[in-house]
Length: 283
Image (cartoon, rainbow, N blue to C red; front, side, top):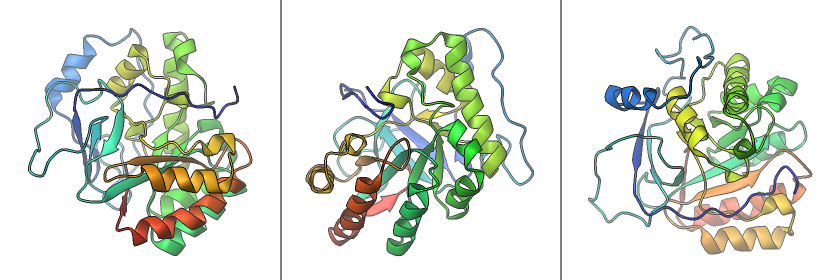
């Protein structure tokens, strides 16, 4: 299996809602304290807060818009908005809840010197804001491109240091993968990520505990056009257009391998989704 091969996740049946404030995650203090008792031993490395960031080191409103996100559930009926209870990190997020026809485009495994600039040009052309899930070693290898993504107003999510399958690693190694990725993103872009996406969608109790400790909302997806497998442009387009609904989180890739099919598909689906009335949000 190559580094971009993603298994299909079983959908959850319990709804959770996470509120992203303009400056990052707004968390209840008691939720954090509750999680701390279950945390693995050792101290998590946190990047040094840079001037201009909030108390947690997260970017201001210009870097991440306020939005609601929720776990893998059918869309709530109008008016059904419940307060967060318990932990904000106990299950991955599969849908956004940001108004009628709101969807999120997430782009994984970059930055890439070849494909990320092409994706950025398309997003700019259509006025679309996306969420880039970045791998730490690639951020370090292409810092200018990572900064270009940030400067264009797109959201940046941690996607581990090396794109490792975390479920196969010891807790200390998982912590290192997650901490080093956050450090790399913060050092290069000035942003401390507020979300985390597990490679291969391989979530585990250890990963979710660390997400809670590091205040990283666990981000998954609900539409996987399997562009990582390079099934052909038409297959990618058909999958996205046939499966995207209000609240969908779409998975695409700009790094890891040849992503020319992804770029070609985005040229088609972006204007089609906009014409269908969808509104792109950042996760």
